[in-house]
Amino acid sequence: MSLHLIKLCVGIDEFTQLAQWQQRRLHALAADGKPAFLSHITRMTPKRADALLDGGSLYWVIRGQIQARQRLCAIERFTDADGIGRCALVLDPELVRTVAQPRRPFQGWRYLKSEDAPADLDQ
Image (cartoon, rainbow, N blue to C red; front, side, top):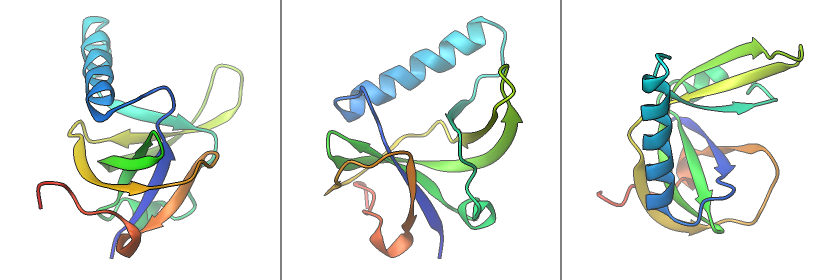
């Protein structure tokens, strides 16, 4: 069974807004001649990275409900310009709609067991 992450999608009001924002980001990176991939930067590195990369996804909470997910492709540690350790959660560009599932606010990311994850809408 896969292990997943769950994260609040702050500043986004609906699924289509997240999809459009990510597409603009990919186009901007490509236009700047940078590698065009999606990632979410976090301060804390998941200790269970191997389990997450074995089919895990990042589930997005939009306006109090899990509404989308993206497969986790890589978890990369790095040090930013200020010398602070960070972690990049590299995401598959395919954004998948899920069955809406209510979720209370929380800080950072949390682990999400497969049995607690909502199904994809197209299933």
